Length: 194
Image 1 (cartoon, rainbow, N blue to C red):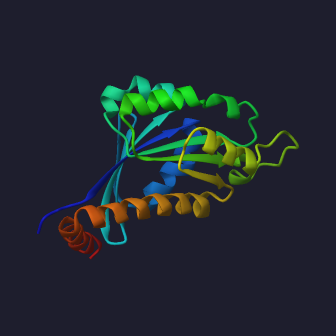
Image 2: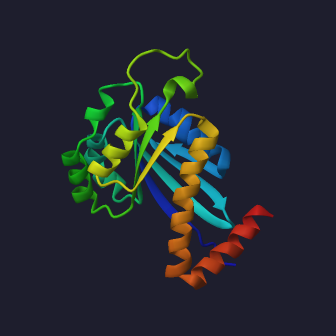
């Protein structure tokens, strides 16, 4: 039996500690295999019977991903994260940086802006400080020409929603671009789960 899996390469930008706790822990729970070498995280998951190899590259900002473009080579997904309680977060990502990223990586993948309610996620006492609104997030998503916009309040539920959206999109593409390989991958996925 052929071992066929779909491969996705994610670039996730934001506070590394938060990303590891929020995004990577969720992937780790979904995975049947995982590894971590030189700031590259790899996971093998089976989603809707399709084995998906996920390689994740982290960066505090887009410049970090751009500087490592030779090591990263290409990306299928870009996730930009913002702390909803950091008023400066709106200024950390700008159109010029996103355009440079697209140019350097010849990026044609899925792009996501994620506002993270850090106080809610980590069950901290809510502050009365400035909070980025859903409207501001949606406006920023549109201004940066990104595809998806999400907010995370509940770590497991909301992160799973993001992953489900992304995985469903790629599985649909895989199914229609290579129906024979899709069925072979599905058979391999069944074998992995048994």
